[in-house]
Length: 160
Image (cartoon, rainbow, N blue to C red):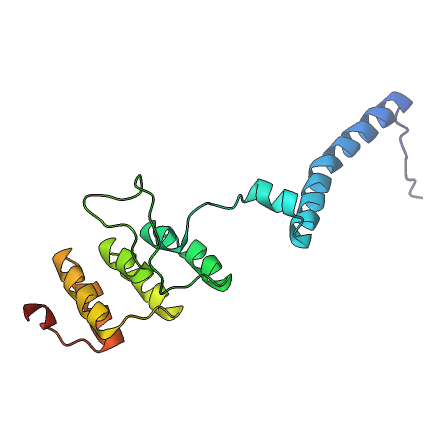
């Protein structure tokens, strides 16, 4: 015959084990509560974890912050308006204000340029030629090519 032996643990051990199990539940409960609050979009909690940056659309392009560019565009910020850039962000002789397209070209970020175009940034024919020439001046032939394709600017338009 097989006998199963059950050992009894002292009552003090049960109390200590219960405390340890209770303490082990605290971190997952905290994570669950904060996840719920963030999921519900409770403003105090979401801004505590992700404070709203004070960058505008042009500054976000200049800083190569694609997520912020998308978020601002979704909120309705115009991709065709020249906005000021804080002086501490600018380098050399970059002008302020500038458009998101100009910020992308000046920062030589073809990713930001492509994103701005994808989100609906537009330029007049004269502005497109100026952007293509600017891209060549700052040494970004890829940006110049992208501007040329997006707005139908002929290569060599800067020579005029």
